[in-house]
Length: 98
Image (spheres, rainbow, N blue to C red):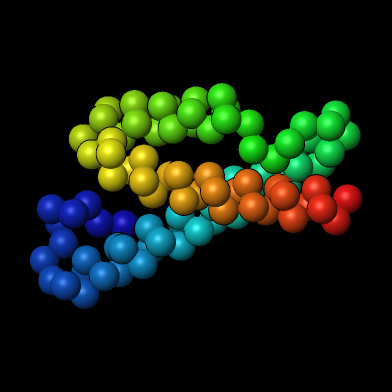
C-alpha cells in the first residue's frame, strides 16, 4: 500500500485504485449481507423494504461523513441514494419471494 503522495507513476496510482476497488467491493458485499438479513427481519415483522425515515437518516449520516472527510456532501448523497435504491430493490425482491 502506497500513500497518494508516494505514488510516482500512473502504474502506482492504478495499482492503488485497483486495490481500493477490491476493498470497496468486499465492503459492499458485507453491507449486502446486512441488507439481506434486514429483508428477512422485515418480512418476519411485517415492515416494508423502504422506510423513508431510515433512508433520510442514512443520507444525513453519509453527508456528515462526507463533510468530515472533505468530500462534497451533495455528490456523495447522489451516489448513496443510488446505493440505497439498489439495496431496497434487493429487499423488495426478497420480500416478493418470501
